[in-house]
Amino acid sequence: MFDWFVLLAPNVMKKFPEMIKCTGQTLYMMALSGAIAFAIGLSLGVVLTATRKGGIWENMPIYTVLDKLINLFRSIPFIILLAALIPLTRAVVGTAIGTAGAILPLVFGTVPFFSRQVESALLQLDSGLVEAAQSMGVSPMGIIFRVYLKEGIPGIVRVTTITMVSLVGLTAMAGAVGGGGLGDFAIRYGHQRNQVDITYATVVVLLILVSILQGLGTLIIKKTTH
Amino acid sequence: MLGAAETMESESKMIELQHIDKTFTGKEASVEALKDVSLSVRKGEIFGIIGYSGAGKSTLVRIINLLEKSTAGSVAVDGQELTALNNRKLRRVRRNIGMVFQHFSLLPSRNVFDNIAFPLKYSGKNKAEIARKVNELLKLVELADKAAAYPSQLSGGQKQRVAIARALAADPKVLLCDEATSALDPQTTLSILKLIKRVNRQLGITVVIITHEMAVIKEICDRVAVMENGRIVEMGDVFDVFSQPAQAITQKFIDTTTTLHRIHDLIFQQSQVVALKEGELLLKLQYAQRSVSTPLVSFVSRTYGIDLNILFGSIEMIGDSHLGGMVVIASGDRGKIEQALAYLKSIHIGIEVLKGV
Image 1: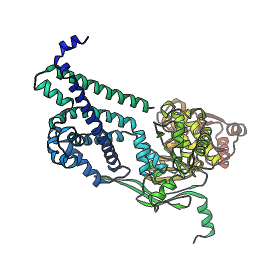
Image 2: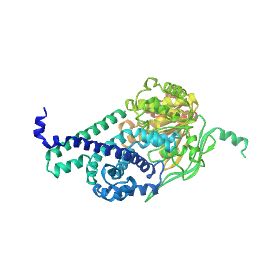
Image 3: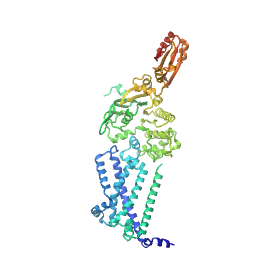
Image 4: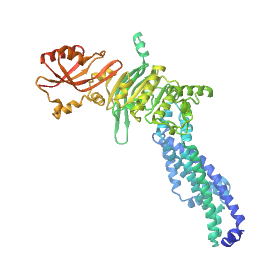
């Protein structure tokens, strides 16, 4: 029954097991670097919001340093970041190649973007909520956990979805350091061996991945918005 | 050491602000939001602060719970000086000062019950105690059936009721209302004001109300301060301030609720309505002192045999006293009219002759 598929995409059928393996690598890179970047980025986003001018823990030195660092990393194209981070990756992870070697650059490539997104999501919260909590004698720590991280959930989920989708793109580039994954798969076979059906098949898998992420995000936002 | 009299005096005061200055320093210019503001609010009263936007009243109310820190001056609530407290102690004091806001500031991801319970979490109360308190408050604000609703499902008036319940959850001694009715329609405003008054009478909570609406002051306040350009320009019992306004701005606020000032337009336009016949007088009569209700117009016309043609009337009750007055054309024998005016003066009616022939 797959005859027509074999006819349409002969190379995909031959490389199917490898494609499954590469999809697994992409998911692994996304899950691990996504989880680490989420934890770090969320924390930095909260720190940015709290320390900025008029924030609950106003601290211009911390804000300024963080702000500039984020700008610095955001201005480095990811492909250059991959190469530039090789020594650091080797020192931290032990290897700069393979899927494990891709995690650190992926975290560095995602955190600055995500921190900014979290900051902007939290800034969109009604400032009256923070003021009301302050008037009730809630501490700054209480405001972070009970107002920012609770009332901000829909906004945080929204920017997490955006970040995860862009992370899909970054993992594809991580193939350049031998990170494996679907991007690497598509370049090696689809591009370098001119097996165009592999390129398109990869796009379809990525499309499904992005759709699932977006659908999940939308669902959570719907459930948490009242 | 305080003398006996001073102790007595400070005991009857709930809020005492002395010589408050507040300057917002910007990059290019600083704004003096408050200039040497002193006021004291008595225990158990409803104190109104009225002014146009930009007058500094919202800053002033935030000085009371130190959401804004004053540049100079002292803030005492219930006998405790607040400006010297560290953040931890200040947070504890704030639990004694409830606050409601113009735009309600309810937490949108929590339902009504959890919004009201918000200040009680981590306050040492257990779940059952919190539930009892919240249900009690829901009953007080007449929203017992809305416990599970989310703020987005409520009307503006219902939201403000929830906000009031939340502000009362920690059993505060003071309730600060920052333009609490300004986002509501007149009918809802009235019901919220009634609720605030009930809270004040039932629970004995001292209330400070910030507003730009004269109607709010007249409806529930005992005393009022009028603010303009960062200063309090007039302060006293609501009746005294509004029956004999000393400042132009106070008169402006009064004009928003009466029609009496429109007579000046008519005179200016030389309207037919104010064209007087020989011997007639155009008068503005105003209640100038607290006085009991008397059948003024009919008594005067019967006793002195003159006619009073009422052009405008605007009379309201503040507490149990009249506030306001009327514009009339008095016609009849000039001598009789003079006698009638003398009588009116003797019962403390303010008389202004606007036009006479």
